[in-house]
Image 1 (cartoon, rainbow, N blue to C red):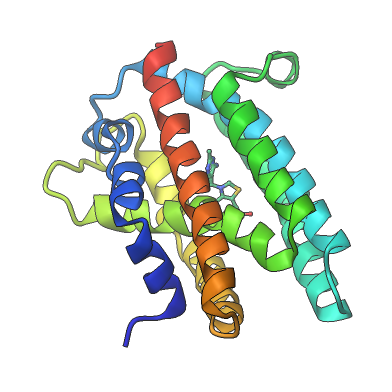
Image 2 (image 1 turned 120 degrees about the vertical axis):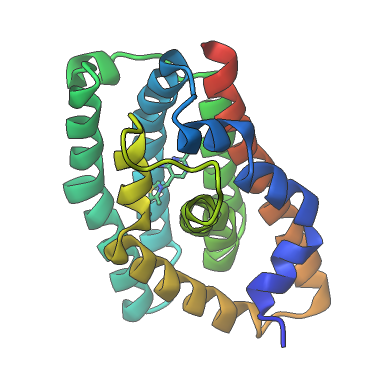
Length: 220
Ligand SMILES: Cc1ncc(C[n+]2csc(CCO)c2C)c(N)n1
C-alpha cells in the first residue's frame, strides 16, 4: 500500500517531477551545467541554509514535548555545526570565500522559498513545518538516487561529482529515512481536510524548490 508521504507526493506528481527532474540537475549530473549556474546556486544555497537553520529553530519552538525538541535541536545543530561548514568549505574549492557569501543579497527565489517555509511553520504547527521542509530534505535524497540510475549521469570526471556524492552518501540517506518515518507516522493521523491543506503547503514548497533550480540557470 502507498505510504501517506507517497500519497502526498502523488497529489503533486507533476510539480514533484518538475522539481526532481529539473534541467539544472540533469545538466549537473551530465557535467554540462554552465559553471556560472552552479556558482549562483552555491552562493544562494549558503543564504538558504542560514534561513533553513532558523526553520529548525522554529521547529524547536513549535515542539510539544522533549522528544520533538531534541529532534529539532539535533537538526539545528547538524546544520549550524556541520552542514554550513561543509558548504563553506565546498564553496572555497570553487573560489568563493565566506566573506563574499555572508555579504550577498538574497535572490527573489531564495527569499520566496525560505520565507514561505518559515511562514508555513509559524502559521501552522510542527507537521506543517515538516511538510514545508520535505521537498528540501526528501527531495534531494530522491534526486540523487534518480540521477544515479540515469544513463546521462557521469560521476567520474564530472566537476559536480562531489555534489552528487554528498547527497548519495549513507549518512544523508539514513537521516532522510528517519524523517520519512516521522512524516509517515504523523500524516497517518490526520483527516482529509487537514491533508488537503498540507497538500497545498507541500505543492507550494515543491514549486519553490523548482524555482530555486531555475534561478541558477536564469542568473547565469
Ligand atoms: C535549495 C536547497 N534545497 C535543499 C537543500 C538540501 N538540504 C538543505 S539542508 C539539508 C539537510 C537537512 O537538514 C539538505 C538536504 C539545499 N542544500 N538547498
